[in-house]
Structures are given as C-alpha cells and as structure tokens.
Amino acid sequence: MIKRYFPHRLLRAGTVLVAPVILAAFAFSAEAVRIGSVKGRVEVRRSQAQVTRWNALKKGQSLKPGDTVRTGQGGKVELKLDDGSKVVVGPSSRVKVQESSPNKLFYLAVGKMKSFVKKLRPNNAFEVRTPVAAAAVRGTVFEMGFDEEGKAGYLEVDRGSVLLTQDGRDNWAGVERT
Image (cartoon, rainbow, N blue to C red; front, side, top):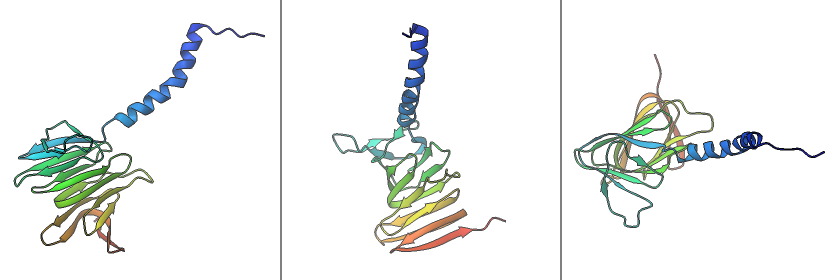
C-alpha cells in the first residue's frame, strides 16, 4: 500500500521536526547578559574583535562570554542576566564574562562587584573568581572585591550563603534569615 502525503501533512510534519531546532537556536542566540544602567565611563573589550581596543558601553547592549568590562573612577554599570539576577560593577573595576548561560561565571580582575542572584535551577552555578579566591552562590546577595595593589580581596554577604574557596580550602560565609 502506498501512502500519499498531502502538502498540509508535509507542512505539519515539517513544522514538528523543524520547530524544536529553530526554538533551540533562538534560545542559544538569546543574550544572557544585557547592560542595564550605565553611569560615568564604562567600556568593553570584545573577545571576538579583530582589534583589542576598548569601546564605550551603552545601555541595552549585550555581552558575550570572553567580553571584558571596565569602569572608570566614577563609573558604574548594571549587568542584567537572563535568569533575573543582576550584577553591579563598581568604580575602577575590571570584570570578564567567562560563561553566561546556563552557568554564570565572572572573573573580577580588580575592583568590586555586587551580585543579586535569583534562585538557580538545579545543576546551574553562579560564581565570581578573583586572583585570590572564588565565591559560588545560590539565591543570595553578596559583594566581592579585589585590590590589585594590595593583592587582597573581600567578601561581604548581605543575604543567603556563599561558598568561598581560597588556597584550596572551602569556607561558608552567610547571613541567617530572621
């Protein structure tokens, strides 16, 4: 017996097979880090650029893994993440987006950044690394900084708990909810 396929059936079958591929491509092309507010001098060095120069960063632009943001003395920038979390990079700071989706991983070379982390999905991570330590979190508010000259860093937890790893040792820092 020979089956006949009518155009509307082929279209429906093609839609069923192609739609997931299109949706998956759209999901991965969505920008995981967008620029919220910008104050003062804020610049970006794109990882994909042929010339590694710094360009002004504006509200609404997106960042990709490998991009580095730096702020001037009075500069400040808010990074909005696709899961509803946000990061505020303070003055005289330099931070690199190492991974943006599904995990959020930042490298803070100098300065400070305050993170407002929404509850993460299982197996997803939010982490900030500095030259001397790394902080991994789930659903919390914390600030981490690094002083390049003094080679010293700090961690301040406003809400929740943070796993701080330094010199191969894990330490928990946190604030109990009352």
